[in-house]
Length: 406
Image 1 (tube, one colour):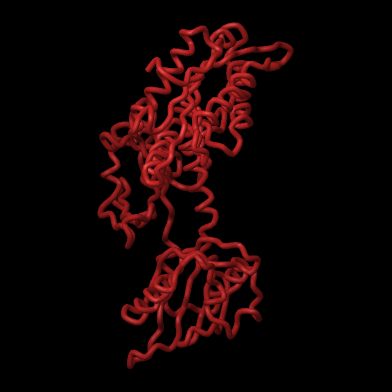
Image 2: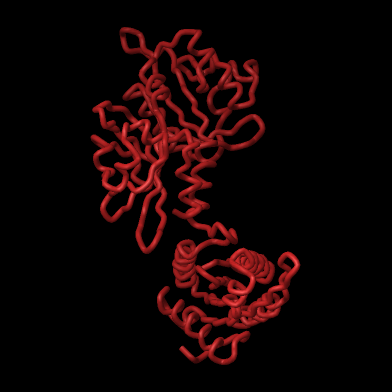
């Protein structure tokens, strides 16, 4: 198991998590919270299939949302609802998903309870507002004060417009109020602005309370702060797309950025450059000084690449001692920029690296390819840059090849 999986599937996590192989749906690893929730033993992992965990998946209103609500089934037959979040990753040429399940019990209770007692209002962990039938705020609970940073006196007599973040257009709010008028409730994710000016994600659930004749008397709104969950989600995405040793974007992220660069270049009629490089003498460092020294060389090389490239592009660790640089520039002659930066890289990488009381020195062989001159799709331009990098090695190493030899 790699460092990413160890970080995600830790027995200390309070959220149930598991690693599922997408090819056959088998759950290969899970944390203690998952095993306790579903009642399985660790020796059942590997043969346990994800499909047995869920009775009837219910997707969010928009299919583009990353999360979905699922009806779960424990080994003993107990059923419960959870929110499911998945992030894909690749290991040994196999696709996996790291899945996190979020408890929704409190949210379900708040959504189903329209008339809450004053005690529940005051002690609820979620922010709660009561308004009149015109949306004028009549009551806020302590949790809402803590979430938003406003004082009670600042909110009473105001409307929910005081929280508008600017991230949603008028049609978003119109659809919300239309659904409240027709169905009596609305729930979904929304971005609101706190008193400090910070914009944060929240889960909002609004219900209308009506008299026997069907006239709206008031609205109750429940707010759940999703900031921690969003930070956690971003952390997972970062780990899935970045190399844990150097911190650089990894091969998967490279292919996403290369695809985007090709689309942008085609749309704008521009060019971009791809620099592909491999360290010379890296194996000797590993063999003579050890793998820890080799890791230090890779980390320092990554820092030097970032320094050389600056704001001109993005650096990636492709695996082993291979790196790539995508240069997107407004300059008409992208090759000139690529050759200049490659020259800086060539010089910086071969500077000695101090390791404990010893010194390691490596060089680099560099291949450069241009889009669209050297390839009009991902595979072709990457292959061209790779071939030119190996041509630089054959030519004596520590050099740049930017044409021919492909």
